[in-house]
Length: 530
Image: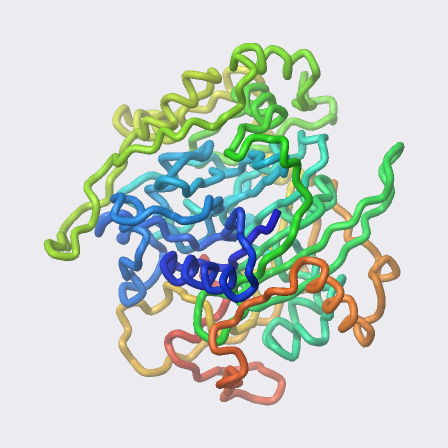
């Protein structure tokens, strides 16, 4: 099966599909599936656009609305996860996943599906430690803070995915798993993105939650985006007891722009006897049913159950009996129904409604899914609590000790990314949105010694387990790219090489940096910048 993998979409669906069709014609091949690694921007109308965490000048309608309205239909089955530039109110309608348009499927906060026997999982959003232990409490109208925290990864999603035991073929995340850069050509990466050097050397670049999932799931392929650079790596995992050692091929891609490496076609083994449609994953359905009582839709922080003597239950993995019961309830048919429907008015370019307010509705797909599997619609519960002015925490009704202390060492206690002095010239940020000055001054911050990665259940593999030294990693990247595909597309490749970022600062990078407004810090010491 040939799968097209896209980095950051930024709403450019027309261009992405056109690029795939160009490659199909050029290579005389057929792409079976498109996977998008976040910043999808499923914007239906002007109200949705106001729920995107980007400055006003970046709030553009792009082309998704055409697929939502039915004006166009996606020519290829498309699966995507959320990033940090999304119409959050739209994606929150589908916490367990669902169709955002015909032939375009969202995996939800976290999810696993199957297509022709290929098992595909993913987790939406990016990691920020200060929201990691909270529930999904945000809803429109968003505040300045909640419009950002809405797309932050939560510990409940990571906990669910860590209950998975069966092999994973493909996994998607928006931000990179922390430490993955040690298993690819690190020198080449830093030549392209020198402003990542400090975080790479300190091993603070990327998501520790995603890294933990990488070590637990050990998928054959892991695809990411977010950092706007193409990067390949190969990680050989340590042996699990009673299992053969596994390896993961990692690939990160750029955003959809001319002369950028934003799309690559990979060939993945599949089972042609399996249905040519999306199917629910049986093990994932069992995990969702088992963990439904861990739901938290408040901003209160709490830890997941673990085997520390404080919880009556900590293992929520599926059993064969659970699988058979779910399969029987579904009539042995795991097909995901094509039940998309237009739920709110669509953007009309001939009659724009600039005063349209963001919608907060109950999506019928989620209602049907929850009724079928006995789950709670998180989005509906948040809206209900807002109307009643109350709070809901299912965990309190079932295991009061689950709330735990926010100082519990079992969770990620720090996030050095907020102290980074890196400057990503590609990243969209929210800082100084109303300031139209040509340049801004950004204060460089040095990480404090007290900020060091501290968490359990995750271990960075030693350098000795990497495939080779940095100086020899060119061959690893070449082999990785050949093994995934002979077709890697860059619009206008080779015509105008990307200009180097000019930093007007002292040699050591400290002090004041004069940059354009679009050249903001990827992470800063303020509350949050993505």
